[in-house]
Length: 547
Image 1 (spheres, one colour):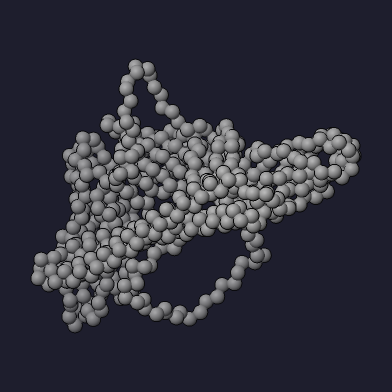
Image 2: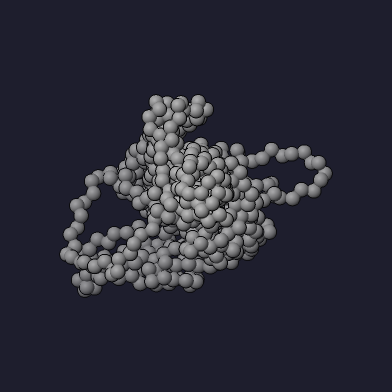
């Protein structure tokens, strides 16, 4: 006996690279014995090996097997073809725009190469004439390095995005051709074979995986510096192009990666060592094409608020005289599932099969923050305002993009976009809120003296370097400033480095001579930090890395 099963989608669990769909329904068997229960309309993208079925019945029944077969239609639904045509057109525009962006980045990288070469020649000429200082070279080299890293990262991100869009476009075109020409299965059908002892009702649950779905975390962080509070809104961006819409479906978002499971060996792999064989030197100008590997950690960049910031500002509404309260995102319950976390989205969600990201709120958390300034003049100019909070959300915050907003007397100000790595429960969460010009930082080389030595002195060259960092608090309140700097570290046994003096002494110092000063400045106070080092090297040896 053949029976058709009506089993709509009842639950969906979305992973980072696929989704688990659960369908439930029931059928009435009119006779005992073996029956074939047919569930049609399943998407073509279904991973056939993942199809599972379970049954419940009070009549005594057994599952005999589950098969997948093709399901053909006389003609493809016109509305589905129209939807695919719209998706293909939109994807073609996005791929073209990404190609134009890559071309622009390429021109910017060429401009940066030219600027570096011209600046190097100008600095060399200026230093010979005394019109340029070593600090000028440091600033230019720092700028070109930072800009090169930014462009390389942007190039990799854009190229990866274009590759993903191209793959999605190719899949849409294949799907459109198959539907338009009638080639291949329009849909798939699950055939569930059941043996029943008597007539009656059987309830079935069918589950399967679809690869064309994913979710990524996103955060909005609003920092109130006056109240020293942080309101963190956690969201999920869900996109799917499985071929079936999820309408009013309870969603679960899992951080597990089912496809990433591996089998470990019984023993650790052997560790071989060999004679070092140096690589051939890189070709000239190759550095511009070298970038950090995909997936590597990179420092968070605070970008200025441009057109995106203007778009995020809301138009003020008329005052109705009624008190208003802030409306936050609906809370999602969080469960542990082994090493993964599962966010249960409250209510039902509508996620159409259009490949576009759809935002779902996972909840808000209000956290106290500690505000301080961080100054690292050897890395970036200025004093950067940093807010540090402790993750008391009750669960780990998955890695994702974060948009920072600064709440002030004039309302919300968009600071920029950065990225946070995974933050465990109880771990610190650090957010950089941009450069505050009210706290000034100036680093300068105030001493450079070289004694080339002679035979009586053992042929030792002695170079003395002295630096001064001046920090001024121009705000109306007391401020805490962390100054990060460094001393040179020798990588050669005949080059010796000795600290002559440091005023004041640093609060922390690592084995690699990385220094930290924790300073508290009163309103209007100016503080100087100075240090001198002596570098001894053989007179016939050229020392690299010195200003």
